[in-house]
Length: 302
Image (tube, rainbow, N blue to C red; front, side, top):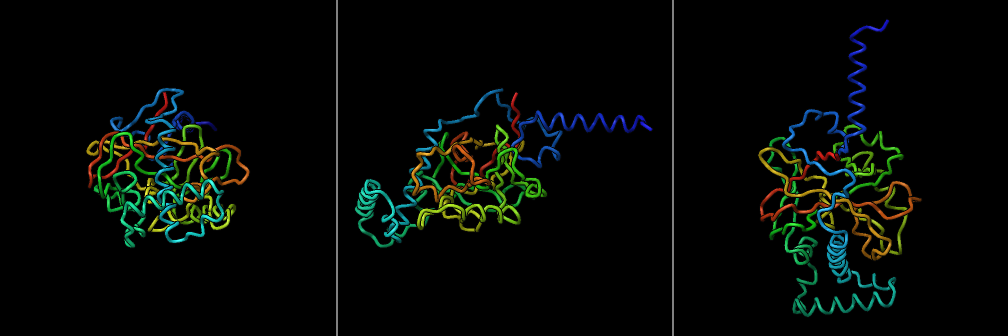
């Protein structure tokens, strides 16, 4: 027998599913748990907008510059990596290494710079994980050295990339790190449990000699790409405004093969055609040393 209570429950379920389908959420679990979120912390994006703070060219340039610097650092320790590259590429890196050595006055210490120092020399700042200033928020991400300029690429969101038709249900249970792109693509940034196992498994598919096609060190406490900590950036609040925003970036096929080992993302399926989806965090304002990064988990497209 259909009673008024069941009718009301049915209406509620339909309303929830309607909102679920129309809500361009950034993090899957937050939809169900934050249906009545404070509107002051909601970000609105125009319908059909690509939601770009800076150009893809600017993102490409930043990532390639940082990754080239990291690769040169690797070459100082493993010069045999050059042997598998085309002659023109070898020549470019030999010139860069000679120039760097001259700049640092052939210092043995500077030829073995830490990844954090390499990023600082490339971008003028460095970020690090640490206890968040938000109560009960756990870890956060801070500018630990230098100063971030508005429009700079500050961080990257790591993880396995799923198309909207691929299985992600079991990975999503109790997982607050599933990022949703505007086209329905998902990125699972969890470094534990099933998510960690899946990423490691996918990362072993492709390799060019000693060069991997993605970074796996973000799964550890010491990621070699120091930018790959974007999953720990906390949501803004009324007290702490957002100072970074998410921007989707498709890695083109022309991205240098020797630099792909620093990308903290990989497709779940090996036969996905087209560019690899990445997400970077862009500074909305100048950010001083010591400040915590805050993004906005709630994005409406209208």
